[in-house]
Length: 329
Ligand SMILES: Cc1cc2nc3c(=O)[nH]c(=O)nc-3n(C[C@H](O)[C@H](O)[C@H](O)COP(=O)(O)OP(=O)(O)OC[C@H]3O[C@@H](n4cnc5c(N)ncnc54)[C@H](O)[C@@H]3O)c2cc1C
Image (tube, rainbow, N blue to C red; front, side, top):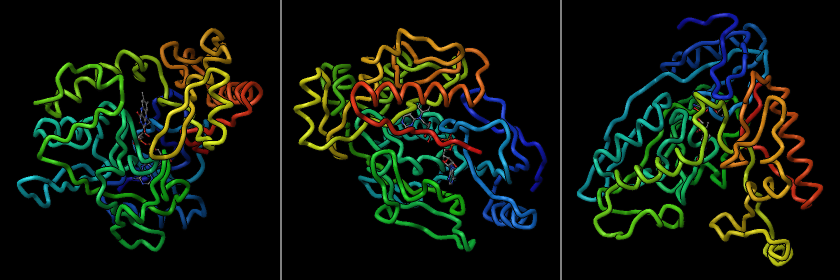
């Protein structure tokens, strides 16, 4: 394994960022060596995937490992289900396309989410009514003591865009096991997705993935053209006692498995941010929850703009928006 100095940090916000040291991690042994190197230098060890949920600062301290182990294997199969083991460096969307190509159901609603499989459990990725936790059997990690362990779904502490892995830099996810269905199991609870089909019978995983891709392409900016990290804020969860107050303000509330949510996009929109482009950073017109680096912004510009948005929502609606991507320093 090659550890290099001044390692460019990959990120979909197109921010210029360099880590003190960096390397590609292709095996458990690479992880152990990179951690040992960090210890001898007296610096921190951090791991990332494709940088699609990160705001990296210009200089990132310590040793940055980028997951680079790929592979998808069927490890168990019945007439109705398949159990897959996926390496952490596997591209997520390519995995989804591989699965829908076999007509395995379970992750088709998660098509076109950028990033690598190893990062998917970190915020329990979710879209269009499905979360990773719905199909995840177990996560393999190298823990703080360098033991290779499998954690069952229940041990991962999954919640809405959250898990035990957030903020635990010493725990590196090396593989996932997903249990997918060979029988049709479409999840069409999200109205915008259901509306795409006139007839639900005979639906394939491929057709659902195609519909998700069409919705996402129309609504979300392509990070290779308009750099972004997807949703910058989580949808706020409120107490059921607050529903009437928010609805009286004309805000929509959604009852989900994670509780009653407000739409962060609606709150931001109601504060006028779609019409207030910042100098270098702005909200995406079709989805104001997405902040876009329009003109060579630095991390500080993105974070300042996000703070302004957060402050206005707090002032108008007394709601604190929580940031989704993590700041890499
Ligand atoms: C256009 C766009 C649309 C998006 N849409 C969605 C969406 O619909 N739903 C959704 O949930 N997310 C969405 N995202 C966010 C992002 O794609 C996901 O969070 C994705 O899982 C991040 O993967 P990554 O490999 O880029 O992770 P990174 O950004 O590299 O890392 C994210 C976090 O995970 C940690 N991490 C990464 N790999 C590991 C590992 N192997 N072990 C331990 N920790 C690790 C990092 O330290 C960091 O804290 C979107 C992003 C973009 C740009």
